[in-house]
Amino acid sequence: MKKVLYTQRVEVIDAYNERRDCVDQRIPEYIFACGYLPISVPNNWEIVEQIVDNVDPDGIVLVGGNSLVKYGGDAPERDDTDRKLIDLSVKRQIPLYGFCRGMQSILDYFGNNLVKVDGHVAKYHTITGIEDSIEVNSYHNEACLKLDGNELVAVMRADDGVIEKIRHKSLPIIGTMWHPEREKSFRKNDINLLKTLIGGFEK
Image 1 (tube, rainbow, N blue to C red):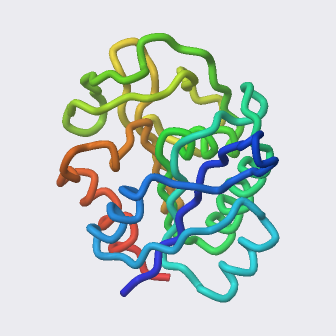
Image 2: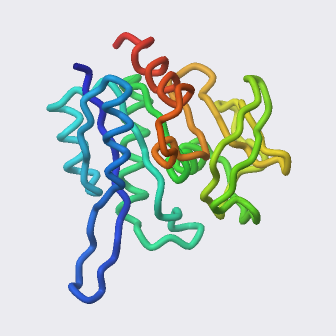
């Protein structure tokens, strides 16, 4: 079974003076439903680098949760971990899928800016573009309206111009602003997205 690493969000628990890594149980279930063995990684880029070296993953998933620090987030260790994993994906051509905050990390890595947006929290909306239009969930306050770099392609957009799906022009990297784990039943297109990205790529 191919191995897929996935990140975790940071929860700050002041009462215990703890910073906890945690994740919705549906995320590893989604990865497993796609046919892969899910392996969580901590928000410590030095440990993550060792995990990648020892596990030799077939894919990486950057999950949602926590805004980037430059946009008001309070988890710099999360920023560092996402950046390290994207860097390793680029250098080693490890297929990478980022959703919501994960896509924002990809956008930031490749030199694109985010802006505050309204009407994208706890909503469903239709997106259109290069691929067939679909209805997706939305749980984000920051988004990208215009790609400033030249390495990513805007695949799908919402009606207000928010970029909802991206792909890299030459590397196996995809981002979506919707959450595949927040559907009552995993959707076929979300499963096919990860299976095509990882299953169709040979290291």
